[in-house]
Structures are given as C-alpha cells and as structure tokens.
Length: 538
Image 1 (spheres, rainbow, N blue to C red):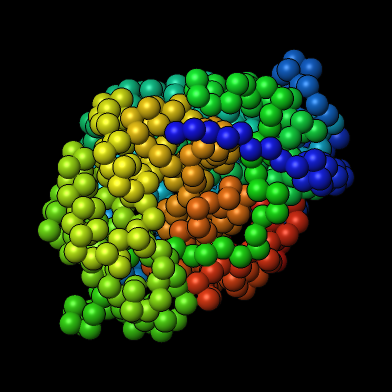
Image 2 (cartoon, helix red, strand yellow):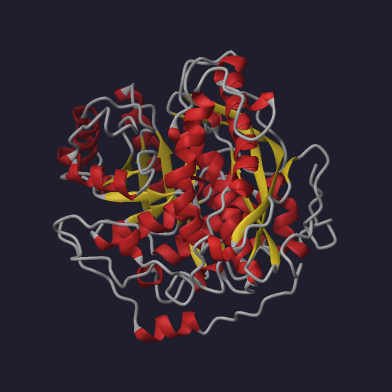
C-alpha cells in the first residue's frame, strides 16, 4: 500500500509548544519520602508499594533536558468489578475482572516531585487464552504486577516518559518476564510471592501480551506524572521541546515508507484539532440477546438496557462491533446478518466483525464475506473492517491475509504489540491497526506514528475500560484520527463501576446521540481532574 507522510502544520506545532511549564515545588533534595499530604498520594491499606530508591544524581543517568524525570516510587491497588451481564468473545467468557490502578512518583533533577495515575483492566481471558485455570493465570498476572511495583523505582533511566517507557519495554520488561516464567524464581526485588508459575499450579509461561497489560498501568501513570510535574497536558509534550530523541531513535521505516523518521516527533502525527466528541462503538458480545425471545429471565433489572435494540434507541448508537466465534461459520454468518438487520432497521451505519484470533485459515473469513455481499447487499457496505481473525503470534502463524484485504480492510488488534509486529503484519497483508492503551501508552504512540507513516488506517479499541482507564483510552482516539470514533463498552457491562468518575465526566461514561463527550477533560497529565473525583480506594 502506498504511503503519504503526514505533516503537522506549523500553527499546530507552535500551538502545542506554547504549553505551560510551571513546576510545583516538592522535595528540594529529591530524597524526601511522600507521606500522603497531597491529594491521591496516600498509600492504600493492603496495596503493594515500593518506596523511593536511593537518590542517584541525574548527571549520571544521561539527563539531556531540565524537564527529564525518573521514577522514584510505585504502588498498586486492585479495584474488583463484576459485569452485569457476561461478556463472551472468542472462546472466553468474562463475568468479573480486577482493574489494576497504579500510582507512580517521578522526580526531576531539582528534586521536584509529582504523582501520576494509570489504570487498566486485567483481562486474563483476552491476554492469555489457555486451557489453564482462570485462577492460576490471574494469580500469575498479579504476581507480575507486584514484580513491576519493585522494578520501576529501581529502573534508573531518566527522560521524557516516551523515552523512559521505551527503554523499560526494551530492556527491563523482557527480563522481568523471563524471571517470572522461570520455575522457582523468587528473585526480582522482593518476597517469595513473586516467584515462578510453578508456585501457582500453572506450568504455562505467561505470554508477552499479558505482561504488556500489566505494564500498561505503570506506563500510563508515568506519562500522567510527567504532565502533572510540568503542569501541562501530556499530549502537548510529544515534540522536541520535551523529547531528546526523535522518532528515528525508536522506529525504522519500510522501503516503501518514509525515507527516514529523523527530525520527526509524535506530535507530527497527531490530528491538528482533536475532536471533543467521538462516535461510540457498541460491543455486541456473543451472549448478548437481540430479541425478547432470547431472554432467560435471569437478566439484570438495574435500569439499563439488555436487548440490543434498546441500547441503540437509548444511546443513539450508529456503530456496532460484532463479536464472532471464529470456529463456527454458520453461527458467525447468522449472527452477522442478525445484528446487521437490527442495525439497518434502527439507523446504524457502521459495523465491524471481530473473530478474536479463533480462525485458522483465510477461506473461513472469505466465505462469510462473499456470502454477505451476495445475500445481504444492504448490510455488506456497513461492514467497515474485519478485526484480528487469526492467532496473534504472527511469527508462529505467518498467515497471508491479502485475500481478505481484497474484500474488506483487515485490522491487527491482539497482534499489534508494537510497531515491529505491525510491520510484520503489513508484510502479510494486514491493512490497518487497532490501537489499545492496555499495551502501554508508549507503545500505542509509537505504533500510531509508524502506522500513519505507512498509510495504515487506525482504530482505537476497548478493553472494557471503566473509571480512570477510560480517559487515556478516549484521548488516544481523539489524537490518533481513527477511521471512526472509539470503541467504548464499559457503559454496557459495568456502568455503576464508573459512578464516581461520571459525576465529573458524565459524557465519557454515558453515550448520548451515539457519541462520547471529552469536553470535561482538562488540566495537566491526562486531564483526569482526580482531586474532584470522590472515589475511595480499598
């Protein structure tokens, strides 16, 4: 596919570089411990915590800019959430989930400090499909999160979060995963409960995608902390005023891509004017009822819709993402038609089909697409793209998908760990990329840049993000310039979980007129306005 290299206008670049850089005074020597005197800095009872490491002079850490930071402390807590209705995708069914919330403290060379927050659902079934028990996989991911709590303050790199996050992903995360997957390995900075998988009754190694999900909350918190320290929206820092490295330090172009990433920064690939409202994609799970005849009587009576037509009517939905099985072609085709017909009758004008890695050969998808085009010509044009039909390990399953791409755009999702995997996918015929903040803010930003430079369209997909997790998610979509809006399904499956955040950002957690509204986000970091959110952490 041919690629055109986008350029930010000079007015856009100048607008973003006029950002505020006031810094709140903190500990003058960089060694004072935080005692919860500021909002959000209290250590929650029972939370896993790593105190600041011994102070290391920034001059020995490769500091290049006065705005550079390093991580000095980390802590985590879990927010358990129960789904009001089960969510089925592929072979997995989710009924409950733990949301990992992380606080990182950063410090600059002058000893000034700030906290930042990140959150992600620990979606075990999505990140780690396996016959091993859910309990053993969940315990393994929690152990890895605890390992990360100790690893981050011990990581001495300094710089912009994109630089520090990239270095951690390249240098430290693979080492930690090897340690974690080594049976009986209890090392890594702490106690025995961070040992290998054999202690949890699970002899399967944790995959890299699961490690990325665990790491994402820490990485998001790092970006938020940096913005908080410098009193600036984090998206106004991805350029050379704050970054010491250009994109050529992180990315390599394909032969038919840009000549070089030298002198380019992520800011060059963001949209000039991010929208305040985004079209909302609703998820139609494999167990979601479409008609009254499908109701069992066990559905919740909590004031929220159950049937798809009721959701479309209440939220004014225009975009539906359909979860399919990938191993039952008749069912998949019928489901696609049923949802499509329902959507047509109610004014829906965009569909996508997600096979969640369960397909094994392109013919399976092609036959469904061909049949849809012939038998339901009104539904076919609504199907904008196909998402991740095949196993996400591209090296192990290098399936050529060009035959599918001739019919519909085909987007990487689970496979899009980073820009290198996107490059491999592009060689195999994949045409687009679904970004997710659950694979780290750092990785999502770099993947965005590489994909756009090579003419690959983007979507931003959900991991059923509630509470704080929703905010970096929708902000990425607004900055990326997706083919259409953002997937957001937490309002379907656990709307009550985000009640505290919805008091401040009502338009983010209730979809109206088919959209989510970002206009209440403001202030430094990701614009959480955390001091106004009345959430008591466990």
